[in-house]
Structure formats: C-alpha cells, structure tokens
Length: 280
Image (tube, rainbow, N blue to C red):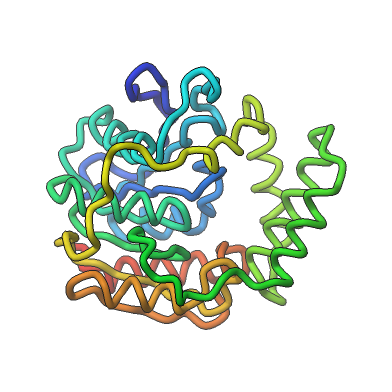
C-alpha cells in the first residue's frame, strides 16, 4: 500500500501481484473504496497474470478528505485522480476496469487519454454522453429499499455496518447473496473510513468547464459487461454503451447485479475480463 498525490491530495493505493506483470487499474464507483472490489475478483486477476491496482477515491477510505464547500471539485477532477494513480506508480498505461460511476470515469479517461488505456472494461455503468433519455431508470423497488435504509440509525460503526450490508444486498439483487462476504466487506469499509459522511461529496461533483469526449473517441479494445440483474443500470445501459463505442464487445451475465456478492460471481467476471477484454 502506498500514497500517490493528485494536486494537493493524497490518494491511497493498493498493488497486488507481480510488478513485472501487465497492470490493470480498477476504478470503483461513487462512494466506493478499493475494498469494495471482492478479494476473490482481485485474486483471480492476479492468478491470470495481471498486477492489480486499486485506490480509494478522494473523500473515501484512507484517501484525503476535502472541504467541498471551500474547495469544490468536478467529475473531471476525479478522472484526473485516476491518471495521478498511474503517474504516482510510474505506469505509462494500464488495462482499465471501471464499474458504476467508475465506469463513467473510465469512459472519460479512455476517450480523453487513449495513450493511458491499453484495454477498457465497463460494467454496471451507463453512457458518459448522457444523451440516452430512453434508457430505463433504476428499479422502483430498489430505490424504495435504499430509501428505507437511509432512514435507519447510522450513528455507530455497528449500525453503519448493518446498513451497508442491507445496501449491498439490494445492489447484489441475488437469492444467493453472500452475507458473510458482505459483512467482511462492510466491516473493513467502515473501519478504514476517515469520515464516512464525506463520501456523499461524490454526488456533488458536477460538471466543470471540461467537455466529456464522445464515446466514438474511445479507441481501446472495449468489453462491456451487461449485468442482467443490475437494479441500477440494467442491461439496456450496457447495450447502449456497446453500440456507441467502436468495435466494443458485449457480454451478458445472467444473475449478476450491481455488486459481485454472490458465490462464483467475482471469479466469473474476472475470467471474462481475462479472456474477452483483449488483454495480452
């Protein structure tokens, strides 16, 4: 584990596997920490011959916190954080995997800095362009569940862990939800968080003067994973992405929700990335 700098901020990073192996940069979604990548997923990528790099976004986990009212940041600033991670670790480029909001950041990174992205994998996300008003919204029952959890007391670490597990279950959307793995993940996320309330700043990071690149500008070999049980960004979002990115490949995964917290899912998705993303 080490810290890299992005402007005045320090970002916590983790590197697994041999430094001689090709690097893959994992970009987690909004409010997410590096520990939200399941260990089985990381281990499978390492076993497949990759060095796996993950990091805590600004305002979460062990990375620096921001006084957003005094120093607001934009979505583009969070994209530059990903570049800073590569720079800080001395990497000119990497295979990139982005999920949820991290998938949006990965699209921006691949379109704006094609020299830094060897291949691109997008999962549980939606098109960066935002010009798809026909795409379905999140499942109403999922939103109702999130609203119910938001009303629970979260004043102690134990209460925050319990609330996180319920959120993970909603996002996983599977009868095979691995509650034990979810509890381990939630405990670690809560224990290592400097101030869990800062994570909400990610939703305040709006547009800045920088214009997102069109999806047609992405030249990296791209795999789009359609999680067919995702209650947030259903498979139609993945199909729209795949049709907008030149030569992108679409891989449908039945039963996969917004998180990989059902037995076998982390390994299956890792295997897809290793075999279908064009990594060599």
